[in-house]
Length: 291
Image 1 (cartoon, one colour):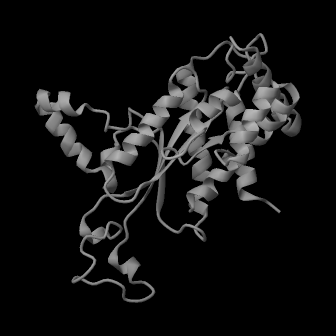
Image 2 (spheres, helix red, strand yellow):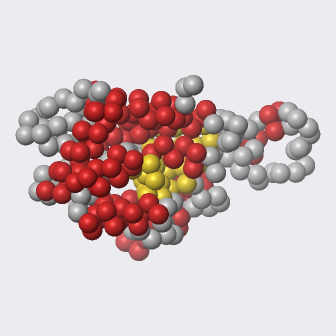
Image 3 (tube, rainbow, N blue to C red):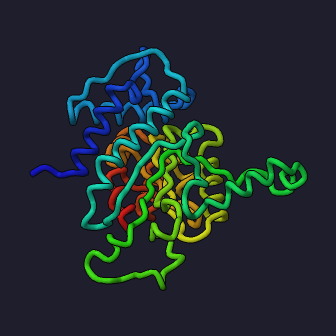
């Protein structure tokens, strides 16, 4: 029997390899490894070996690809995985869903969603007033990598089963299209291929801005990453209050790789993250978003 999320997960890896996102350099180093870290190279390489042996994927050896290019490709493939899975969970989370790679170049911005539309007005004020801009800064403007948002409902759809609304009530309900609102942001997905330097903290800053600046329902705030080093994963995954959870692109393979070639510290950190439910596999993400 075909299993939707299992098939989508396998297709995700096929796409990672065929787009040369997850690949090997001529020296045999995986593209998500830190070349200055022996542990990172060992774990990342073992993950590639496990995936290749398990599914007979073809792994290309290519020259070094820029981190920016890898990051954009990883965002795109994360979006594709969610498009293959989440909208098909209508029995768990019905709705008219859209899933887009957002980033800084998309014409759609955070302020185009119901919970954050006031940010456009705030941005216009600070653009015109330098003193106000200096006082408030511009940290409230967030451009998530991937977003999931929900379209609003016509009254006919709301009243399909029974008469629920009319012109006299529910005049400010966000999900009702006749009230003139904007689409509802359901999830903000930060896709980080690796966690070098301050990338982990960038994800946390984005999360805190979404929490502080919202009006109404808080969207899911998650991170998807291919980072192989447990200590770097812990820098973002440990703790609560900002990010819902961190999702690894290949957690089962990561656990196997760390057990085989990782240090004792790496194994302990990874066990803490998994047992504490702060690190999950990407296959868990669609179902968690249905909550």
